[in-house]
Image (tube, rainbow over all chains, first blue to last red; front, side):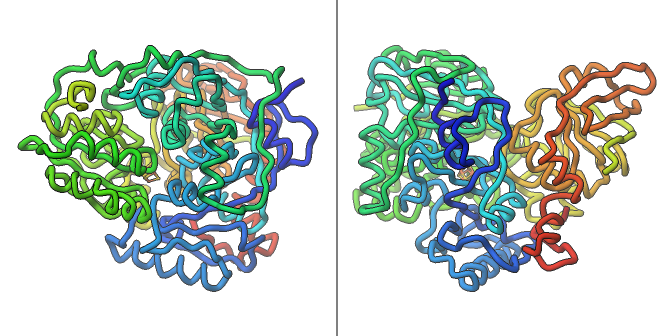
Length: 417
Length: 174
Ligand code: SF4
């Protein structure tokens, strides 16, 4: 019986010839990534760890520290990195949202397993990595022992056909899938097909990241030429890897075809993306108070480039706040050099430091009761970005940028020049 | 390990997210205080009513969302087990890792109302409404998972294996 992409990786790392859905397996983990929040609440250093070379620590969710509580977490993270010889320590200054840092530094490799204390770790599936978020206690356990267990879930495969239209981004592709097919609870997602070549790596990462919003376990892409180029650029001369391709006779819970040619920009209405995302043309003319471009899903350089192109030489509508958060310090510097941040700030955007911040309503850009936000971040749950009485719509960076100019939810195709 | 539990039931609906159970503002608080904000929007005042040994019964896709250790908050309130028609897998793992039994039982929310008494066995995989006699089968937990529960969670297990200094004052109270 053939295996899906994810089954192949899990089998390899469990030392088994074959695994299939329903099985519980113990796997070696190739890279474990810890985030700042893990150190903020009652952290106790372990007595010994498995392997410091298989660990990274990323300061991302609350940096620079917005509270003494978080600052003390930073102290503990630094001590841990020093005492245990963690070379891959991304402290404030070389920091960024962990999933961006993982991508930029080649921590996610095809055919390998990556674990991280954040639920959007499935992002690294864009690089053919079996990556998923695990709770802080479990990450601690992997740090110590080097392995963990997985229950192999059934896989749903999405086959892309056609070519992605210019105004359609990875966000739109994902929202289309979430809107039409709904939740994938306790399922793995696998992407492929001839249309994939028209979906750049940045968009693949958006799609992989947001698997979390439909409750999927893993979301994985194949290591095609684009992917291999990306890996080579971000870890030149890195050790060779063995990518995981699905078998032709792999068993899927479902195989669904997405015709990219027919897609248009999408918007999710407040609360959830699942069966709640629609073509922008069907969305009510909604006045927005805050527009947010950022997060691990859509704070990439490519996202900032699109937003800058839309707002260049224009002005954010009166009464609208446009917040832009680059996904990492590296993205910040690249976007600065490319002039994107200048364009955004000139148009009236507030460009912030790279952090999770507004995305999870923790330490900046919170929403007041009764406000409406249009976000390109990951979650539109009630209360996610501040008041539970605020409404959060979700769309691509292009749609968010276009809407910031007009003051209401706007089809970016009307603002693209 | 005793895998049979009896407790008072609280029923919640479908797709309850981790943001609804462990809101961002509560992440700045110590665990005992943070625990007072579970369901802060969904069921204001619930944390005053829930007591040790109680069982939470939820609908589909329970625990969708982030990796924040919600299970630690439920343990803090004395909740003895979580039952759901369907769990988000990350949330299920977090419960197990914090020593909180989590049983998947299709149809569970229809069989219970707030205040009912439930009996369940998470090794055998069933739950029963003691008043109505309705008994529903659930997904029994695999032996590997029962081992973690028997140890009281993953951190006590690591302490026993010599990775953390005993007594367990691990990174997160369990
Ligand atoms: S940017 Fe948002 S979704 Fe991404 S890791 Fe940070 S808080 Fe989570």
